[in-house]
Image (cartoon, rainbow, N blue to C red; front, top):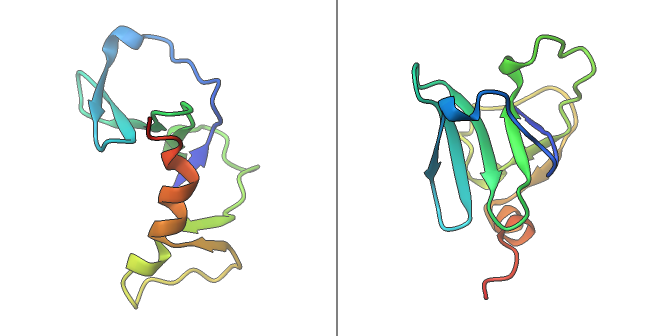
Length: 99
């Protein structure tokens, strides 16, 4: 579960964060000391997703979208209605221009 935090995200203690290119279009941030996953970021527009568990106050979050829905196991199902996006839809949305 992650929270879409937009494109204007900054972190205190950036010297403690290691960034790994996880694909041609995205990167992931980890704590250099303990290895905790801190964020997932789209390279082309800096759209940043942060794991929901890192927030102290999550009462205002709404589970509204499932991604890579075409790759999920059959037994994996949530009760509430969400926007469901396929792998192709996600790549089209976040890949941006390739030049």
